[in-house]
Length: 92
Image: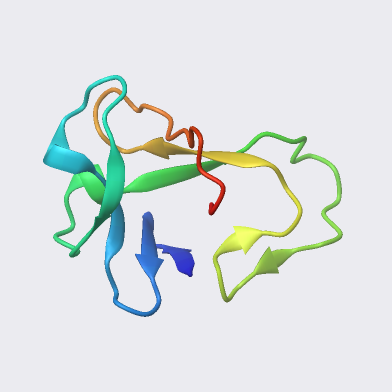
């Protein structure tokens, strides 16, 4: 279970964070979980894809750091600002 906090996705159980593997800012690079070292390859921006101007009725889930019921994607904080994509996984 992950929480989005301070630009990082942090696993509650083991405190490891989501990162771009190998610190490589390349198209198609794998994303994994590793010990937190604070690098840009471990920092992300959550971008909501719906209209944020409308009144939000569900609100922020403070336990997880996300707004409820709003579609989003995550973007790397590395120079190319690549988007994380889940391909073929059923446990996300």
